[in-house]
Amino acid sequence: MTESPGKTPNTDYDVIIVGAGFGGLTALHRMRELGFSVRLFEAAPNVGGTWYWNQYPGLKVDVESIEYSLSFSHVVEQEWTWSERYSGPQELCRYANFVADRLDLRRDIQTGTRIDVAEFDEDTGVWALSTSGGETLRSRFVMMCTGMLNQPIKPQFPGLDSFEGTQYHSARWPKEGVDFTGKRVGVIGTGSSGVQIISTIASEVGHLHVFHRTPGYCLPLRNHAMPEEYSTRVKANYGAWRAAERYNSFGGWVALNYEIGEPVTGSALDATPEEHQELFDERWKSGGLSFYNVYPDTYTDLEANAVLSQYLQAKISERIKDPKLAEILTPKYPVLTKRLIAETNYYEVYEQDNVELVDLRENGIDEITPKGVRVGDTEYELDSLVFATGFDAMIGSLKAMDVRGRNGLTFSEHWDDGARTHMGLMSAGFPNLFIINAAGSPAPLFQPIILGQEQVQWVARLITKLTERNINCIEPTSEAEDIWGGLCEETVTATLFPLTDSWYLGKNVPGKSRTGLAYFGGMENYRQIMTDAEVGDYSDGFVLSTLPASN
Image 1 (cartoon, rainbow, N blue to C red):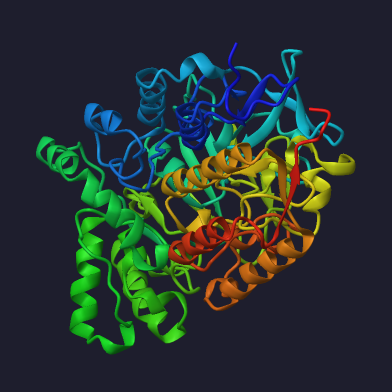
Image 2: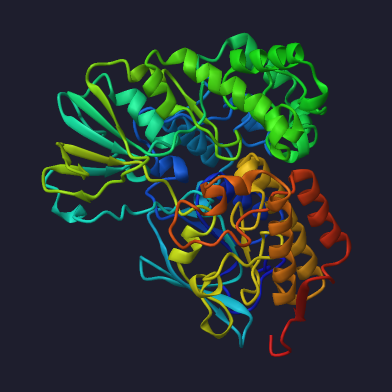
């Protein structure tokens, strides 16, 4: 029997992939194209990644469906048609299933199977992996496609276990849904998840208490059914639009919104108030996250940022009739330094008699009681509690896994004082293990599907070269991690992001370090760094070792 190109004797696979989201499906397709033996393991019963787990009420992706899609298959692009401009989790899961079936990926996917342990064998230079089903497998390479938003943050409130009602977390919503009809419901958390949940269930519940601490910049999503003409035009021009998506977006922060044309490249300080108004009105009318592609210096200059901040603050005031309520719900921090929130009629919800905002800015939640939530001297009696408390972004999923590198080192230990990676792709002490859309990458400020595809292509070319040259292992040096961590800090310090507490910087998790968490230098620069490493034959920052003679 002919072995696959990277097969090491006494291994079951060349590559094992963990996670069946879009990154994992991309990796599986590419590795099979190159002829490697590969197996993908997914803990969930089906493909879809974060969209399988996250199905709370009102959830919509905040990037246009036509853009939030895979570009490596012309067949998939042309045969799949989105039903609405911004898809929900059910349609995104149907899309993931369509990709798996249309490209015949499912025969190499094992769902309902968690990787319990992954341990590097230093004697043989391969990974030994144990599954929840009791299998033990050996693979030369491992690709972790567990995503940047995967590990939910568990609520940490005194008395949580004493609550006699029902509790739900936005990231693990029951598949059968929840009937809140007539119930007294409390929502804790007003980021994207909380805002979408609040907007959706407010008309259903008997009474809704929103426990609110930090307001966000909430903008109309303006979702609608996908016009046939628009879909046809997109499919006819996908090639050009994909190129624009990769290369023409400002600094690589985010990709294009097809309805609004080219991103702006000039300074906000050089434009007139009339030009500001015209540009911002266009973005407001378009909806979604199109404000990410305005003047580039809004990310780096407070005066330039204030031009946009003041525009959006005024829009919030226009939508809220009660001045006191508007003051509570209007953010005061520089816009874009926390994730924009795309919503539908969120501010209007507070006009309903059955919705009450509980302001936590001065006094936080004291405890969860058997009957509800206590804030100061007031106890709010509830039937259900909804925690929209987000994720341990970028690092949570890998730290939660039992992955053991050289000398038994785990990610939890190695990243204890902050994420340590080289180029957001590998970590020292974990040979032949690659992370996709995770710590140290530009993932928070770039379209993750595009980034994942580029990272997978880079890894695929690397594995091919190692195989051709009979090189067994590659791993970054500790010094390279130090340099990359310094570069991540340098790039974020050059922006306004440090002025705001956000999950971009790990501020949503007590004690979490922002060190190495994300690369803020833009996708264009990141792409060049990856290219330089490849052109330089991985001679800078990596250690390569030849195949042991016994093999």
